[in-house]
Length: 165
Image (tube, rainbow, N blue to C red):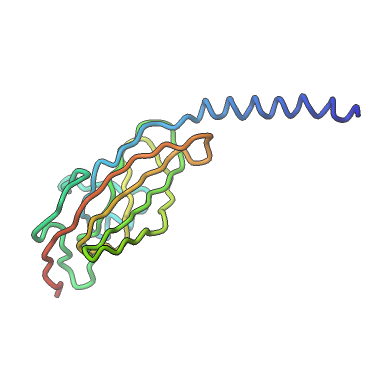
C-alpha cells in the first residue's frame, strides 16, 4: 500500500511535465502557398531544398493549362512538382497527403509524405505526377502533440505536354 502513495506523486509530475511540454511545443502556423515546377537538382536536395529565384509559384486552387511545367527532358528530370509550404513556429513534424481525382472519376490517395517542418519556406516533392487531374493536398503538422493542425490546398493539371525526346 505504501508503494502506491510513492508512485502517485511521480505520476502527477509526469502529467504536469507533459502539459508543460505541450505548451512549449505548440504548433506554429502553416499554409500551402501553392506548387512550383522544378528540376531534379532541387528535388535531390531533399528537406534542405530551396526554391530557385526564377521559379513561378502557382497559388493553391490554380488550374494549370497549356505546356506550363511540362517535362522537356527525355527522362523527365524537369517539370517536377513541389508543394510550397510557408511555416512560422518552432520546428515540428508533419505529413503531406495528396489525393488525385482523375477525369474518369477515379480517386487515388497516395501514402502521406512525412517531413520535418522548419521555420520559413519548406518544399516537398510530390513524386512523379504527370496526369491531368484535380489534386487535393492536406498538410498536417504538430504530430505527436495533443492536437494536430491542418491546412489544405489544391491544384488542377489540364496540360497538353508534348512527348519528351
